[in-house]
Length: 385
Ligand SMILES: *Cc1c(COP(=O)(O)O)cnc(C)c1O
Image (cartoon, rainbow, N blue to C red):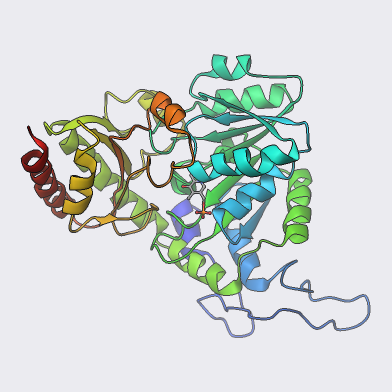
């Protein structure tokens, strides 16, 4: 069946006793054993919980992998995957990276001997040159956050398998509706489900999908050993959000395309980053490996002192961290999501102090444009010399 149908049907009729259309929330820490050596398949909820299993099966099915895993947060999922590696191992990681993942590598895993090279993964030659004898993994974000750089997944995954690296794709920005890295050969996919999959700015969660049984065994061992699992209530809430993913993504990207095009002709805007723009580098690569451009638009103002004025002036759009929910949010990466990346590195890779990131919601696009338009007028009025 088509992905849209599988999304909507996730969790439907999972309870043969009652026929419940909405999957039941199993708030049980432990499960009775019928007899010694016999089990219902459930023993203890850290190891497996019936509501979590419905969610984990759903995400595995959507991404085309063998098994899914639900975690308390996206960072818990990323942490669990980094623990697949050993002290002394080296990872190649996209240089324009979610700030929390950068912080985790630099301030936590560095202390446990994990070596990292940040590399522009949109350039396969650059990735190749950064390979070391001890390289064991490749971690890719595409499109990147917040610069929307596109990395060629088939080429990178081929490179990883040639060198026996575990390839991991953070698919948060695209969701399986638009991009399925495992179908392109990736070993593992991770999501911050707090974003588009949840979709309503009402929950924090992480998901992982493994391509092979061997990797699934290793991830399961870590999930059960570390225990950073998602609780049953949030598993249900996430499943409930995912049902409308197809409709939401269509509207997100339709609005984003319209707003990005409008932004490009505003005199107050210095630069617009959106893969759906004809001028966006990597647009052709995106068209080959994904079914759309997503709902994230970044743009640069002329000067850094215009940023606070714009953030104060938006009314409909909320100034807040995060992305992927139905409500439009605007974020200042330099001070929020990417604050832990040193300024000099930030500016060099392009996450400047003039850059703002817009998570385009599913409101009426014209209302969003009106809000940005009046905010940009304030910017012009209050900062023009
Ligand atoms: C938000 C985010 C994360 C972290 O997820 P949490 O659910 O906030 O822990 C990881 N990667 C990307 C791309 C994100 O946007």
